Image 1: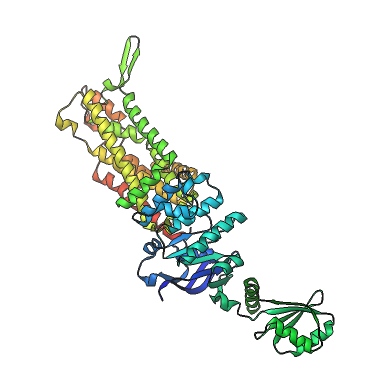
Image 2: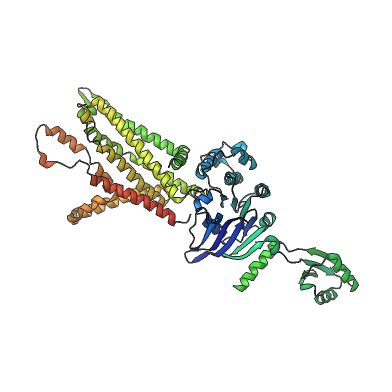
Length: 303
Length: 274
């Protein structure tokens, strides 16, 4: 498989503060990657380093197997960071023309890109007259101008209203569907869960997970149950080895975490055989959010 | 190089303040020249600056380059804002992400500086030539094209001054502070020069190496020279002559400063996180 980016032990200090601490990962062609982490976990700094705007304190990275130096490699990628930066007096088209000059492109398709993000009607208006959502969409159009090998997005929905968030996500999903490699940094878990196949989790600058989204919440899920006779239910659950842990929730609800696959009807049948009538039975899978919180919690205990 | 220049000119073309200031500069430029041709008519006194001999070749090269270089501050504002705007709009960051290297960024700015200086130099040459042809008492080819080193000195003066502005703009990142900084350096050089003059005259030569001093030393004020030219016919006294010539040495100091400023700008930019 073709490696687009490999990062090796990348570290950044801001004074004494370690913003990014020995992060290493690889980006392969054709996948959609998410960098997940709370605010201040080092996502933007990591992206800043690979995009040539932040100098690494130590460690290294290489684009396209090191065949190109960084600024030439950047001509083949598309990236938007935090918030869109363009020349305020220039129109959308003029800003794109400038990007064309910088990236040394020949005959880019302005219309196709601007139509994709829904800005073709406003193409001649000055950038400063745009709303934040429109600015962000222009940034995406600009990043796509060179049909990039990889699209890097840093918090693309930050500060947008729900409609704007929806538009941006729809655009990203459309791009991902075309097979473009994407690296998306976000603190919004559902965003990453919806779009990404792989996820890298950062916390306090350290990488605490690198793998597929599916593998991350590989647990078998859990049941939420209730019965008239709570004590009998608790005893039954504790006896059954299919349940890793039994947690008592408010309102006499029990959370039974599975350590092997089991369907809801199997549990219901087993309970019935034990003279137990369940008044409430739901099977749930842990969301990425819970997995994420679990991971960061574990990491905190280790530290 | 053509790519970098076209990037920079494209940016300047779209910037309204740069356009307006450049236009003001070149209009003021022409006016400064035309002012001298006005015929002041105060009743019995009919006075015209142009007739006082300032437009005689080759003196005109000296006079015009000196006077016109005063308004270079207007172009300096264009140069400063074209850099500080990249910081305030954060477009510098975007340029780098789009694949411009830091070296290319500095070079594109420097090329713009050279281009503007070249345009201004060309204009000062053409305007002086025309004014001279109209008003000069001497129009022999040999005299017209003598002392053209003032034109070269003018070009070096502009490039080195704008390079200083570029360096300071990258250093402080705010246009108003940058202009203040230029003024501060001017003050600092004056004070240091004054101290040297009165306290340690043996070291006064050091003042010639200060950046702004070395630039202003390139073209010495032409007014006393005009007086000398006038009185030269009456009395020949060569002992009391100020050195108005431009030596190679005088030219080299600002050129070295230009290199230092460009190199310094690049290193500042390389070291910084954006």
